[in-house]
Image 1: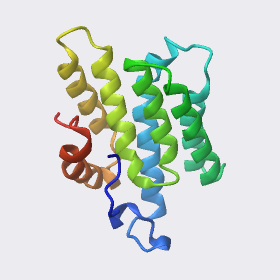
Image 2: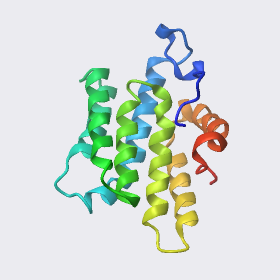
Image 3: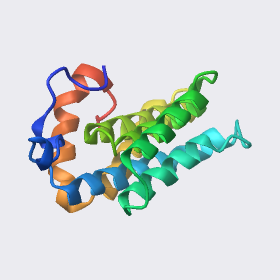
Image 4: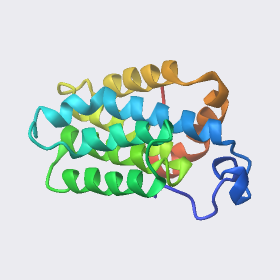
Length: 171
């Protein structure tokens, strides 16, 4: 489960009845793109000629800048997820992280998916016996990148959804 059945109004924009400001929505998307890009080399090492996950991250950032529509970002998310389907391990998780990052334009709560898949990618890429440590290191790096304006929102989201769907935010 990536998203709970009842959506958290803190991740729904004000114009759609929630409490999320557009500027904070963009900060979530930027942070998600940073998380995904941090592990993107794990995908590109396996699939160097497949541009879909990198394009998804670029589209997430283009959406943040107001250069593309939410629908364009969402389409890039789907393409990145398709790039992951035939893969396993770190490369697959890295592509999913990119897809989740682009999907933040559509649903802000996908920010946690980008971060979680990046942690899963780091765990999967680690040498035997070092996956948990690599995951904690990635999680700590992500938290260092969090913009102050959305820091508490994301940390609370991690606390609320970690046990029900991710089990990776234990740094």
